Image (cartoon, rainbow, N blue to C red; front, side, top):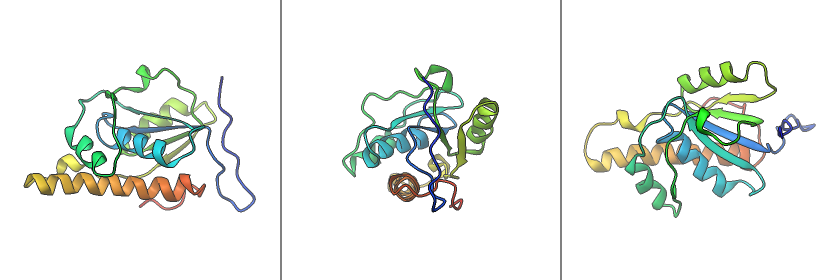
Amino acid sequence: METPAPEMKPDGKLGKPGAVLFMCGMNSIRSPMAEVIAKHLLPSDIYIQSAGVRSGERDPFVDVVLEEIGLSLGRHQPRTMEELEDDFFDLIVTLTPEAHHQALELTRSQSVDVVYWPTIDPTATAGSREQIVEAYREVRDHLWRLIGERLASRGTPFSGSD
């Protein structure tokens, strides 16, 4: 059954979505982190999943930075759109250019809102373990802020491009 698209409120803000998908390149860092954070911040009646353009491998630094704030990926394993059990989403939040292009292509004949939240790739950081972990913390905190401001507070996910 398809979830109805979120309604626009009179003040121009988007209403609560019924199903949200976070997408990135390999579903190993950014989108699973966003999924866990969203499940923590958003009401439990919102269906939340994550997927990648292609499947990657689970990244242990994600576990480290989520555990610091009391969250966990649990048994999450990276997956692609094709591996999702449900593909009816009324909001797709893309975190990489590649994911954004694929989401637009996959949804061009559907009534789905696709938004792009540019999010850095922490694997591009070189240096000590602490410097690398700090890059992952920055991604975690960036996603927490965006989800809190644009979804949890029912603000519009379309504002700005941080």
